[in-house]
Amino acid sequence: MKKLLAVLLAAVLAASCCLPAFAAEERHLRYLLLGDSIAEGYGVENPDEACYGRIVADTDGYDYENYARVAMDSGELLERLSEETGYFYIRSAVARADIISLSIGGNDYFDHPDVVNLAVGAFFMVNGKKLDGIAEQFYENLCAVIGEIKALNPDATILLQKLYCVWYGVAAHIYTACTGRVNAMIEKYDKEHPGAVVLCDISPAMDGHPERLADDCVHPNAAGNAAIAEVVLRQLYDLGLGTETTPVVNHPGVDYNFFEKYYDNKTVARLLTVLIKTLTGNLVPRAAA
Image (cartoon, rainbow, N blue to C red; front, side, top):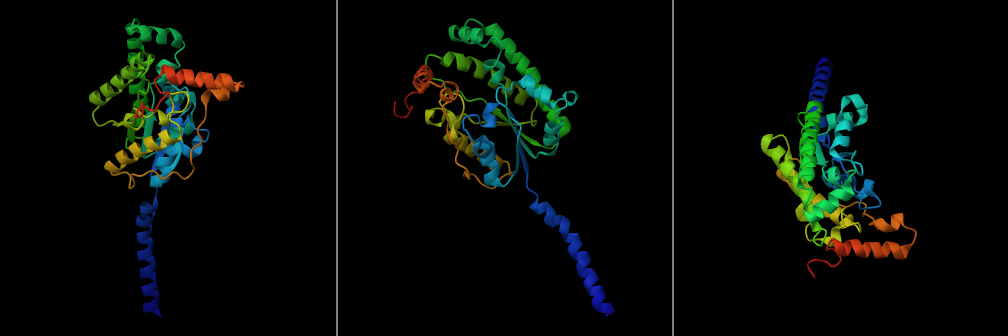
């Protein structure tokens, strides 16, 4: 009997020693999105189910959180990450994340209080100093944002997304003047802080693909979110943080018409949709143009 009890006790001890190893193997990586409406999934009506962050998480089996918000600029993101402002749930999410996708910078221009004058000046290429000043402030904010993230979680992998540019028509000067400056600051950060972030260029998923744009010609629609997810999945696979490269879309995205959301008159909404697509060179699929 004593020998039997000794054998059972040894088996129990051996099993208990193995439990932490099994638990570690079963823990899912935690994936967090921060930033603007691109990361939020504003181009579909069901972003919680069908934005690219959710698709990436569903495909690779990550635990998923998304605190990106429409119209957020770099200053607002910094505010939400700062301890003094009381957004403790966001700071907690950052602290526990293994992978963080960061999409920020576009709204420093496109949601700027003086956006109309900025756009007109960018179109005529006459306000470079003001555009440069916004870029410099964005860079300061970006350094502080990533500094806050690093202070909370020095081990997280940060995928810092570059902005895509999908305007090709007469309005292209406006978009490129802004996105080009944001991307230059993102590249500057990467150069001056080697190894701090991993640059994630999602533009190959969107460039030349108007069929992947929502009708506002800015945000990715359902197809665009799936295409961006594929880019992110490939990068995570190459980093050894993922196992799949083909997106798994458990819940198909529902595209929306931006103007129909804001105008009761459907005719006006359709005319505005055609107008914005014409001005941005996205009325006809570029492959067929």
